[in-house]
Image 1 (spheres, rainbow, N blue to C red):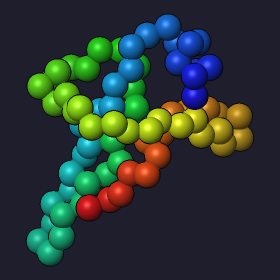
Image 2 (cartoon, one colour):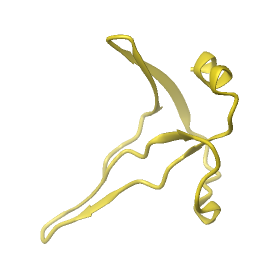
Image 3 (cartoon, helix red, strand yellow):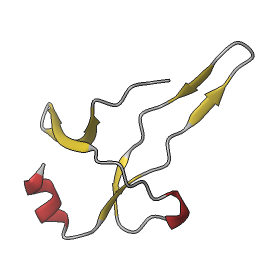
Image 4 (spheres, rainbow, N blue to C red):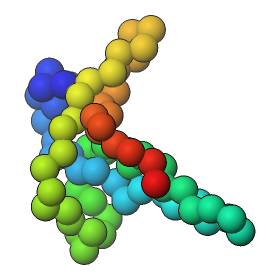
Length: 70
């Protein structure tokens, strides 16, 4: 994951998770890890999270490790 971060040479942030609300349930998707400045800094989170690299068929992406859907 550090190699991807070094290649981008850009700050990164964890995007606001998308919430799905149904009649009988609420579901929060895992938030995306993005490069650049966040559009809304009011959602800053101070809790420590672990970001890891996922490599599927040569496509690398950063994911949040241990995210639990609610």
